[in-house]
Length: 429
Image 1 (spheres, rainbow, N blue to C red):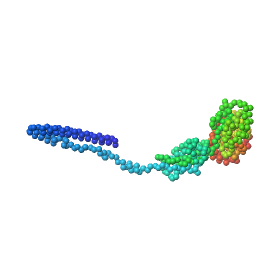
Image 2 (cartoon, one colour):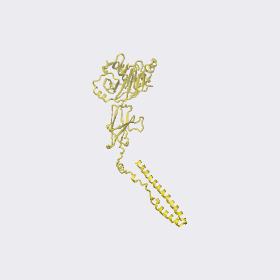
Image 3 (cartoon, rainbow, N blue to C red):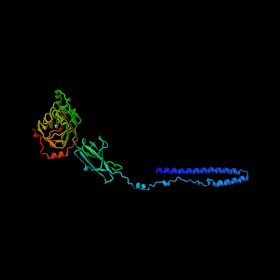
Image 4 (cartoon, one colour):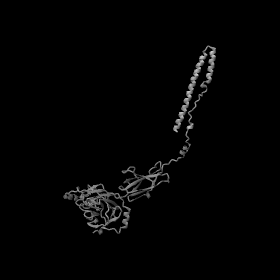
């Protein structure tokens, strides 16, 4: 189109220039005739005047000025170049722009929290076939009730959800609750977020009490590694004097808090001698709790279980009535045993690299599972008289604790099914 316009312009310009050139020549010819006429009028000779008049008449008759049209051959009218947008105008008028999607509503009664997964379900006020996808946001919180505008944890975003539900898998519940909100999007625009909702995410969360750890154990967050250069012979008399102090008596320590153990500064003494032990900092005094631990299978020795907070600083796990554990021994010959009160029972099962621990305080049940396939390894049945804490031991090896885990559904079902058939500590020999 632009090329055609340029060509039309060039053609019209050429026509106008040609017409202007012809008019210029006619004007010059007319000026010459006018000059000749003036000279003839001034002539005194009659014969010369008559001949000059005849010549002027002939010249005027033949002059191009009398054959030229002073009207321009071309004009600025470009109507023939106009484009008809009628069809396009009708198409634009027929376009229906997408409206802003309605705000979804999260259906609390249909949402589920189980096995460290959360299924969130929502619905629109009315069906909308124009919805392209949904955006779900979630964040952790320790506050119940309506979500607060500002939290310590940021919103996490899940985009491109094509249905009105979404399941978040493999979560670690290190807070008591989670907030959720969702918005709908079409091809053009996103709607408003729904009213946030709060779901409870109960799980057992604890840290390792570095103040209780044997000096040969290097504790970093939830990981522990054997360090042969960390242990030193301590002054037994100083330890004895400090142990006898009322502030550090085992009985006083055990009764200070039913939930969270005292801090290392005012808590129990470090384990020493051959008790390469470290305890968790949260007490179990009610309910069902679950946690897992992965360990280096090349460790010379490893143990996991529970113990009273007052477990003696020289006591190894399973060697007294204050602790229950399963013990891996890689020294000389590999073996896996259940230990309590200095009794042991060899367990005939494959040794896993990750162990799940289930504790039901009211029922007095302590079970150990292969965390990979949730197969039962061993169950202690007792009656806890005092709160217990998670307990771990490692020698020439390492392990990592995994907390914030809910009791797996398969474990709960297995506990109900095997409640009368599991092995107990009474059978240890």
